[in-house]
Amino acid sequence: MLHNMNSIVEFFEKNDFFDSRLYLRSLKDHLFASYDLCKVNRCSERECLLALFHSCYGNIYGYSVQGISYDDRDKVKEILGTELEFLVFTYNSIQAGLGLHAARFIGDECWAANSLFGGVKLSATDFISMLNVYVIETIEQIYYLVEKAKLYSIVELDKHVKKLDEIKVNCSDNVKVEIDKFCLRFL
Image (tube, helix red, strand yellow):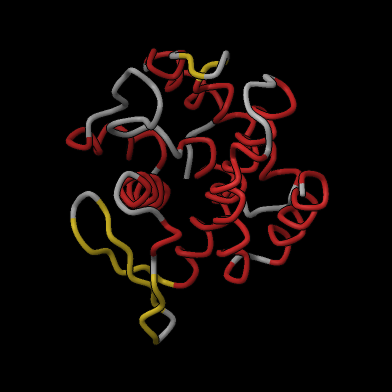
């Protein structure tokens, strides 16, 4: 999958948009914190790595910079490998579209979602992995905004919290536990 940790560090150093700031911290800080929270919650290695790279493409929500162009996927594949890059690209393009929370089950262990590039059909495994990362990175961001940066109250982020509760049923059991802990702490 990945060449090694040096490749990851080099990737982040070569792409200075990871140092762009939002909410008093860099995008890189959010990505590594999401990765760490995935690890703490016993997510799979591919979910942890997806969390680490989930915002490397295109328009990066809330930041005044562009990530890697969707046209430069081959460069990212060299670092991440084909399978992980597909997950990162698909996750990013779905989130930049209607979002994973708008995906629907279409039967036969498949999910359909809308991305920037049209409809996407996902295996249950890929959908659940992406959903787990969406939940973890959202929880990480809310923790940061409410408890560390103290920029928002939990009430101001209520629409994000409600989305977590709506999609919980499709998450892995370990991520459901994190959602429950989060809800107990904040609600």
